[in-house]
Length: 250
Image (tube, rainbow, N blue to C red; front, top):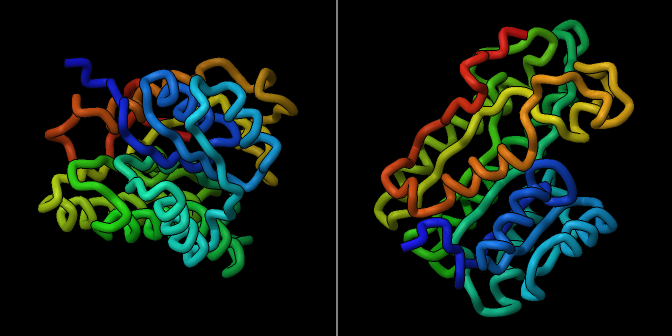
């Protein structure tokens, strides 16, 4: 049996307007999944749809910093076609480097809402039998920063560390329904996020300007797909480093 066959599976991909999320959506479409993609930028969501195979996919413009709206939208997406979700690839998030001396409550709320609370909202939805099928899988894009830390990025690191901690308890709670929950913790990836940061980690105006050594979104998408697939059926409740053993001392 082809363990990377997603035929008949309905999958939600967040952050699909660019980067890893876009690549995950494209790969899933090639593997037979019915994919629903969400992000804030409609024009980029339409571009992602145009790159996907098949005509069964759809998109929804959604601000993933809005906890209640995520839950409401998830319910709507199930009611539209009557089909529950089987998988979630949570690839959305923001990174805003902020030195400790400049941290504010608004910074904390902004970063945690986008990175952590959004993941919590999605797992709340997965916990409802009328919205998410037994035997499914959920993968959240965390970060090496949540494990190893990073200077001038403590709030971002804390948001990812909290995401990993939440995942571990969620995995235990959802185990009875054979729903697997994991996070992957990559180092730097060649995406727009690194280019568009308000306080930049890299001096680059385009993705092409980013330095060599960063991981490629398409390769990272393959890791996400593997964790969503039956290949990883015995793996749940773990935060997995994906950093080529670099440990990103940064």
